[in-house]
Image 1 (tube, one colour):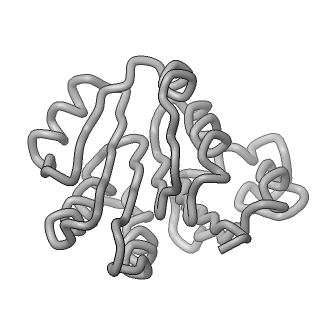
Image 2 (cartoon, rainbow, N blue to C red):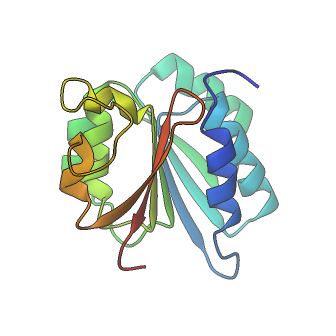
Length: 173
């Protein structure tokens, strides 16, 4: 396993916990071998999984899409993350959102835009946001950058192996 793919264990766990008796809507922000390879396996096995992937690197998305594109797993180039969220209504409910795009600020834009529209949101490399905010960069408590989300979302930090992954679950679920 690539040492940066530390989110794969948790990605597999979260996808395995999704009910398969319905259409499953998934969003992937920032494509790559670490996430796209796993999402591809689920899309291939379960036709009821509808996965939309977004990436701001034109060359990279073409490479990944060529390898993993399926009728129920689509890839879209994004020139500007702000423009995407202004122009596109992400209506409805998403069972799972994976966030690992660049630049760093786009990840928080994505989290802020979808925090009320998803059952589960996975944020890879979350420690970046705590730098300069709290002493423990792996914290997801009241002293952390993520405190503003805790009324709405339950946060589960996975920092046993680095880089760390944060899983948010909707409290209403």
